Image 1 (cartoon, rainbow, N blue to C red):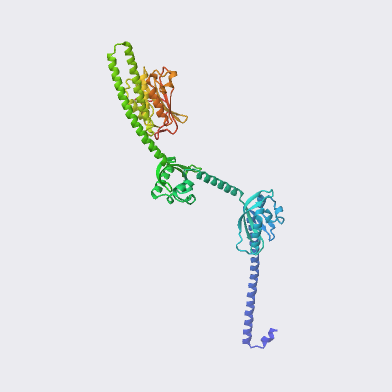
Image 2 (tube, rainbow, N blue to C red):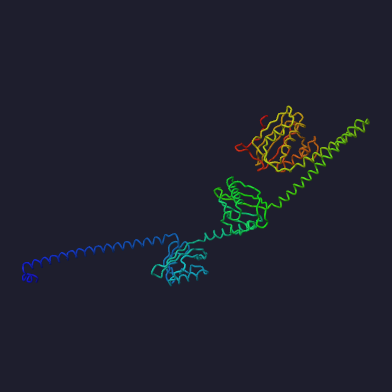
Length: 531
C-alpha cells in the first residue's frame, strides 16, 4: 500500500520519505527497549518491597515477643487480640486464655478500671492530652494484685492500640520500705532533744533535726541538700567544715566544745560529738553530729570550781593552824617527858605522842585526798612516771627493772604519787628485798601493769585490808589513796603476790585508757631491763 504512493513521488522526495520511516522505526525500537526495562525494574521493585515488608514484620514480631515486658494489642472494644509470652508470666494466663477472650480492662483492678476505660475512649476520639504512661494495679489469675506501669499508644490510622505492662511491685515495696525508714529516721532524730545532723563529704546537710533548725532559726526541711554556710556565720561555717574534714581524715570520733550563737538563747557553749559515716565498702562518705547546749553545765562547773577553791583554801588554812597547834602539843609532851620521873606517867606521855602522830597522819591524809580529781586526767608515759617516782627515793642496793617502754595510760596527774607509794612500801616493808620490777601485758583487751618485788610479800588475810584506811605496817593511807586515784579513769588495783616470796600489784587499765607509741609492739608480760 505504501509502494504505489512512493512511485508517484520524485526520486528526491522518495528518499526523504524513506529516511523518515527509518527514523520512526528506530524510535519505536528504542521505546520497546525502554518498556522492557521498565517491566523488569517494576518486577524487581515489587520483589524488594515484598522482601522488605516480610523482614519488617518479622522484626516487629521479634520486638513484640522479646521486648522484656508484657505486651498486648487491644482492639476498639477492649479485647486483647494479641499477647506475648511475658503476659503469661505477669498475669498467669495462657495466650489462649487471653487472645480474643479477655478484655484488657478485666485485668485492671477495680479502683483503676474506670479511669483507664476513659483513657481508652478519649484516645480513640483523638484527644491529644490523654496520658500514654501511667501506674495502675493489675489482677493475676490467682487473684493477687500487682503494681504495674502501663504504656499505651494507638497504631497510626487504626482503632487498635498496643500496650506494654511492667511489674513494679518489688520497686513499690522498696519505695514504701524506704519511705517508712525515712519517716522513722526523721521521727527518731526529731525526738532527740539535742541538735543532730548528717552531712556528706562536702559538708552539705543530708538530714537535720528539729532542734538544730530551732537553734539556727530555720526550717529543717529547708536546710537539707544545702551547705552549712546557709545557716552558720562565715567563721563558724569554716570551723565546722574543718572539723568535719578532720573527722573524715582520721576516721575517729571527736568531742569539742565551741561557742555558738543560738537563735533564741543567744551566746551559748555547745559540746559537739562528730563521727565518720562509712559505706558498705568502708569508705568515708560523710559525718554525723550531735551538739548539746552545755552552757548551764559550764556555769555550774565554774561555780563548783570556785566553791572548791574556797573550801580548799579554808581547809588548807585550818589544816595549817591545826598542825601548828599539834606541834605545840608535841613540844609540850617532849618537855613533859623530860620532867616526868614516874614510869606510869612516862607511859601516858608515850601514848599521847602516838595519838598526836596519828592525828598528824590523818590531817596529812585530808591534804592528799583533797588533791584527788582536782586536775583533769591526762595521757602519761608509764616508763617516765616510774623512773621519776623511783628517782626521788633512795634505792640502796635494790635493783629496779622497767619493761614498759612506749606505753601511755590515761590517768589522774597523781599517778606518779601512786607509783611512788608502791615503790616506797616495797623498800620499807620488803625486808630482804633485792629487786623491784615493772612489766605489762594485754589480756582481754585490758592492759595489766604489774609492780612486783622479791621481798616478804603480803599476808593472805591482809591482801584487801592494805587498800583500806587501816594500818597494816602503816601502808593503809597510801594504798587507799592510790586505789581512789586510779579509779578516776576506771583503773583497778589488786595484790596477787605469794606470801613469803614477794608482793605483786596488778593495775588493770580498761580499753581506751591505754595506748602504744606508733610502731611499738604490744608488750608481753616480763621483767624489764635492769636500769
